Amino acid sequence: MKKTIFLALLSAMTLLGGQCLADNPFVPTTEGMVLKTVEKDKKGKTTAYTTTVVAEVRQTPEGMQVTTMNTVYNADGKAVSAQIASDMEGGESIDQKTADMLNEQIEKFSTLQTLVTDTEVIIPMTALKDLMEDMTMEGYKLNINMDDNATYPVSPKAGQTMPPVELSLSITVDSKEMEIMSVIIRDRHIVGKETISVPAGTFECWKVSETTDMKTVMGTMTMLSETWYADGIGEVKSVELNKKGKIESSSELLSVTKP
Image 1 (cartoon, rainbow, N blue to C red):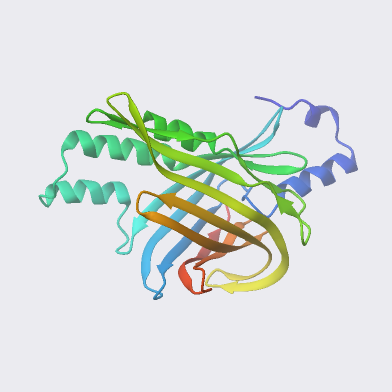
Image 2: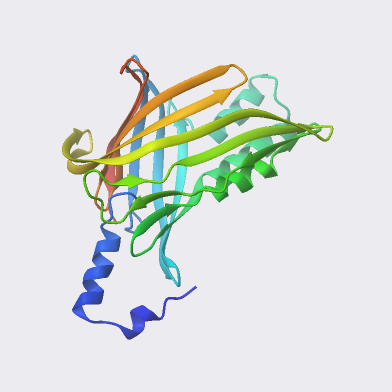
């Protein structure tokens, strides 16, 4: 897992290229950086907090691999895994085997490895596929069909477009498979640069717009998401809008702690 090219090429051009990779707006690349985010519902009520730690940044033959660890807390500040244990103690209808399985899946899902190449930031959605396919419980299995990764440009430009992302989720019971959800993230494009102020400070950001079509057994739903990303930081703010343009949920960066 080494990239020998960085040992051989130490010219100013190479150093400049490395700096561009490090300062991409879509994923933080400073090892040890800690970011805290708050999520709110359409009424502005806090629903959750997330802490993201940049656990490791290393060079690979494919590019820069960034490993982040995410911990989700409820509105009261209790980690989700701790909440599961608390529910058991409080007599909620969850057994130890189920709790252990859920905590294991939460731990797996909390780790994300993003690849930064010379041209793209690649969020490997295959990790989600592997996670879902590992989940089995009481005679059924969850399956996720997905061939695409979510990609973003290292050097974004206003009006630039990104490929759509498609996935479907199905459940297998007694060897019979039934689709329970399908998602298409389309019209993914860079809107342009905007200055955004959040509790963590004021940032010059790239605004990204995406439309998500979700179909479930309960019906269909279309949501527009607008997200602001800052160089070297990643996501600073995001909002999800319904068809009428009203906010359904939002998130903001609360703090950034650098090592």
